[in-house]
Amino acid sequence: MKQFLSPADLGDLRKAFQEAIEIKNDRYGHVELGRNKTLLMIFFNSSLRTRLSTQKAAMNLGMNCIVLDVNQGAWKLETERGVIMDGDKSEHLLEAIPVMGSYCDLIGVRSFATFDSKEKDYSEAIIQQFIQYSGRPVFSMESATVHPLQAFADYITIEEHKTVERPKVVLTWAPHPKALPQAVPNSFAQWMVAAGYEVVVANPEGYDLDPKFTAGATITHDQDEALKGAHFVYAKNWSAYEDPNYGKILSKDMNWTVSAQKMALTDNAFFMHCLPVRRGMIVTDEVIEGPRSLVIPEAANREISATVVIKRMLEALEK
Ligand code: AN0
Ligand code: CP
View 1 (tube, rainbow, N blue to C red):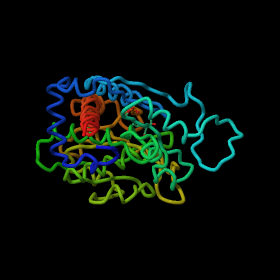
View 2: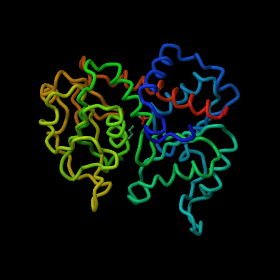
View 3: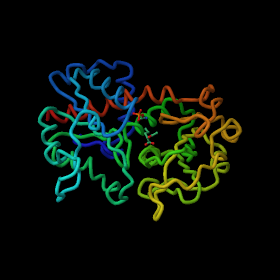
């Protein structure tokens, strides 16, 4: 595997799940694979889970790990070609990327949507430059439009907890004070459809996601209707995708907050969220602290999803 952005990069999801469970039962079983290999993790944005779980995954595989927070201590990077660099940016990404590639064997990149340009965000301009110019396999640690390590961990978590072969999985928008990317819901919808589940996406009008990611899911603007019979409820805020409101907040409607009353509409569903989550906005304390909340095991599975992905990239290096 040379890049990791989508479920297609992983191939057969059932095989990937089996590999995940093998790793979970013996997470140091491949500790020789990464000996004298180095992972470079590059963060353009903040992180708790991704940083810790990905570093832990690399260590499980015997790798060395270097972490760079681009905005704290590195030179300010220009990302556009053809500009006269007479401003505050000291270095161009086109030099920085091959230099970074020369110090490592694999690269993970976190680079959120900036909302400056939908076209730029949806072309995944930053991570694609890493893929093109680093000379190394590259995986997304949440790039502009996708968060595949999260969606893979979510898939593992659902497989572990489901009690019917094809569960009803509902992705619901919920209110949030700041404009957030569509990366998590895009990947979640894409992976859940790829897993073969019954997938329903519920969001207020104006918040429909890019159909490229939701193809195969049912889209509705009626949250209560969507929740009926759900086995898993995945809450997430995102900003508008559709023009002319790309990246904007159109609603903070607290009727969309996932509460015990909302969960009562479901088939005793599990509650999921990628974290970090704002209590009282996205979900009530009662639901997130309740016995059907999977937020902690879901976050713990980030170590597992990252171990599978890094293992596959290391195996491909040897070929
Ligand atoms: C980010 C997002 O919504 O994409 C990261 C989630 C994993 N969340 C925030 O910035 C709060
Ligand atoms: N879920 C997730 O990716 O969390 P962080 O932003 O803390 O890494």
